[in-house]
Structures are given as structure tokens and as C-alpha cells.
Length: 494
Image (cartoon, rainbow, N blue to C red; front, side, top):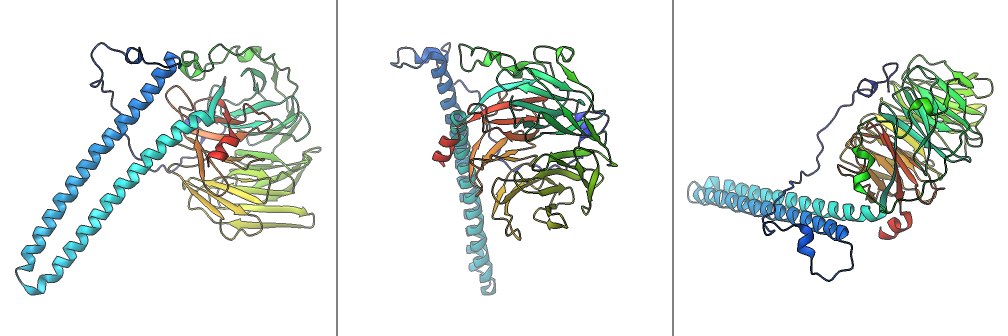
């Protein structure tokens, strides 16, 4: 999120990208097993089934993909076995030759034999790991389709979306913060934009809503944070379409950044902030309300976090100590605690519960930029990092994490559901994964060329008050997505 340019490419600190270690799966489009001129639907004709033809075609496609994956795996297995046999023969031959010669070289036979078994074991382990990874990916994909469903896409921003949040008061709306210098409020049910905030002169990097009033807090690349009031008129919900999921109407087919429905000029626009907080000397990357909503905290690339009084906009405290730019800040839902994260690989816990003592604790559990650290409703902090790990910490004993989640891609702004405490991880590689607090993977949100994010996922936000659309994600592809996560079934399956 940079400043005035507003462009996604120039907006973010360059990350040190690493090659993902995920297994590359070759997909084939072979139709050898199908008689010429016969389509999938024709192959199903005459079979006794009450399933709609389109669903049966879809199932046949899925099973065909699975068959091709395991066919590839079978071929790889044969190649590995041939390689193992060849190496065994070569090394055994070397050992026999050595054994018949100089007795002092007997150790070489042992060494050759040992290296043979090591190599064989390594190849077998690699094969088993590849197999389990493929099998688990099929389980996750098929399971995720049923447990995690895409409900709505929110399209209208003209650049990447850095952050999103859901209001905590009625009417409940979704807020998004974008590099296009604007924040938008959306009707969750209809997917229509209902209000635009255009008061910032730079990228809008975060958005958070007041706990009890219709006020929003946004942080920006223009080195300020704004507090602004909003009033929205929600459109009437649209009747559901005949088909529950019509791929032909998928909004992913739209050009990137195309405004959904009406243009910005027809959306009510707020251009003036109620309060402007401007003590930072660099990009303000995040901001949040302290419990009660009378104070806010901001985090900046100037390596400091600031605490302000909302009513007077007065700077109360400057929180210094981080060695590099801050990336995020978060407040505890019920206590006067703040956690800040930074590119210096640490996150800090600031305690304002005692007015006379403002203690700080530094946590060094990561090896790369800490992209976010958030509180849970209980006594935990969850931190995510560019080092591809997420760690769960106990506030009462934060010497070491109580759980570590290792992933295959850098982790961005995470969120934890309040009721079931499920962690939603947005990744640089466009995936979104769900874990429980003990580090057990629950699901991966479905993603394909026609579903899910097409570029890096920046942020996730839970909305447990809504039984249907209860998780939101946003990313560099300029859209936010609303998902239905069947949490009871997810936890039962675990």
C-alpha cells in the first residue's frame, strides 16, 4: 500500500518471494478412452440415475481428473522403482568388485550398501509424500466444495483491495479499502455498492468500524487516518436465480476492475472526514478502535504506532521500538491491549490496562516480516508471517507458541472467528486455508479459473452474525468475495 500512486504494483513493500514447494501435478486432456464422436453426456445416456445431466457431467469430469492424476502417479511410481532397481544393481556391482579385491576396501562395500539403502529410503519417502499430498488435495477439494461455497462477489474497485471489515452495528454492511484511494461500503446480500468514501489522497490500506456507532476508521498512504460517519440505505434483496450456481453468469468473466452495476458517480459519496489523525511521517498501514471506541491506534511505516483520542483527535501516546516499518495493528475485543507487527520479524504487545504503566512485550517467533498479529476472543494471539508460518500464542505464557502452522506461501492479514475460533489464512499464492487453533487444517476454499481469487489474497474477515455469508476475502484482483462456511460440518468432519 503506498502512498499517492495508488497502484497495486508499486504500493507494497517488495517481498522476498520463494519458490513454492508444492507438488506440480500434470493435467492431461486425453480423450483416448472415449469412443470418437461421443460426448460425456452421451456416455451417461441409458444409465438409471435421477441426477440432472449437468451434475452427472460434472461428476464424470471430476472422476476423470482423479483417474488421470493417479495414472500419472502410477507412471511416476514405475519410473521411481526402475531408478531404485538400477541404482541398487549399480551399487551392488561396485560392492562385489571391491569385495573381491583389496581387503582394506571392505569398508567401501558397507558404505555403498548404506548409501544404497539411504537413497532407496529417500526415494520411497518422496514418493509416499507425493502420494499423500495428492490424495489429501483431492479430499480437500471435494470436501471444500460442499463445506465452503462462494456466495457473492463484490466488484467495483479500480485497484487492489488491501483490507475489508464488517460493521458491528445495524445495518450490517461490508467495507473494503483499496489502492484506488477509496473505501466502499457494500450490501452483503445484493453485492451492490451503497456508499463510497473519497476523502483520502492516497491508497486506503485498512478499514475498521466503530463498535457501537455508524463510524468508520480508515488508514492511508497519504500519512493520515480518517474517522468518518456514514448512513446507508440498503437495497431490497434480489430474488434468488433459478440455478444455485450458474457458471455462465460468473462475474469472474468480467474484465478486471469493471464496476458492477452503477458507476461511482451514482453511488452516494462521503468526501469529508469527521476527524483527521495526522501525526505520522510515513504511510499509515493500519488502524483500529480500542475497546469502547473512544480511542484509536494507528500503525505506520515510520516505525511507530500512535494512540489518539477520538473526540479531540489528540495524540495520547507514540509507541516506538520497532526497528523497521509496521505492517499491522490490532486491538483486543474486551481489554485495553494492542498488538503491532513489523517487518523487523517481531510483534509487540502493548498493555494500557493500567493508566500509570504502559508495558510492552516483544515476541521474536518468526524469521521474516510479521504481516499481521490478531487477538482472539480468548487469551490468544495469532501471528502470520512472510516466513510461511502462522503461530498461536497464549497471552499468559508467550515464551513459545502453543501451535505452529507451516504453509507453502507467505501469509497476509489473517482473521479468527469469534465463536468457533477458526483461523482464515490468505496467501500470496491465491489460496485461502482454514485451520483450528491447534493447527489442524480444516479446509481450503475452492479456487479455479472461474471461481475464487485470481491474484494474491490480502485479507480475510469473519461475519458470524450472518448464517449464510460468514467469511469474506479480498485481493489484488480488485474484488471481495463472500463465502458460506458450513462451520458445524467442518468441525464434525475434523
